[in-house]
Length: 358
Image 1 (cartoon, one colour):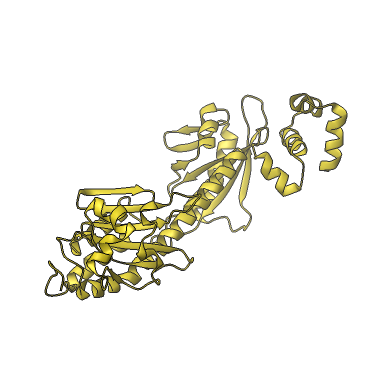
Image 2 (cartoon, one colour):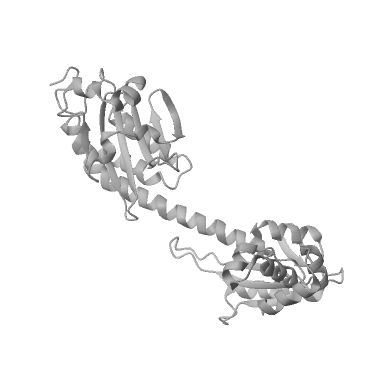
């Protein structure tokens, strides 16, 4: 037994402690400071100096990322590059197996290792326990708890407790991956909608505006046919407003049985082309057990400019860069003569591009 080793070999989890740690683990992906609270709770239970979750290991092209909670900086989660893991014997261990280190390795040999001298000793770390957590997406997340030599090593009880928590950490990480994918897709869809200059206005169950994107804000600021009256959307023309309110009401109450989204045109006092307004009901919330009807309105200025990325247009339609730029100008209603001048090409060249586009 090494100096400082607890005779019990580590404390087992009580039912209350297990429940509290599970609560922290499953709240981690969905709460703003969830991973801080999770890692800090694990650090405190295992009386560790540090607990580190490696999100990405460093490579030649990527500095990697790790999250660390430590006794030295309580209530703070630090993120940084994961180059600290380079050369660590823990990253090469089989996945999903809790390992205590340097269990079985002579102290002198461990102290002589480059990893200990460069990455452990400067931070007062000597004993480690952890596992390489593999999730469904084949990503591997090394998870380490560290103690100083004075604290004593982790014991068999610690290992058993950590092993019982490992499946739950895996599920929390899988949930985090799913949420990150949804957020990425949401940002992608939002950017695509903004590029197409489509305003989105979400109405709650009482017809009040509860959410809108930046394009919708710009449309409403114009007060050219559509406006906000308090928290309600109105059309400037009484006739258009009656049609707008009827469409919203039908979508909110389910009176419209058509599978095709409802749409109307709203005139603009400025004389410019009407707004196109499409209404789509948002599905009932099955999980809450409470019916909360809501509707999304999509507002489009048929004269407005679209702003897709030229590279995307190139890829989608197999065009050259010049052809893609010309297509974007023409789609926005720019005469071919003006588009050619803007692009710095001859009119004959522009017409040749146009033939290739068609």
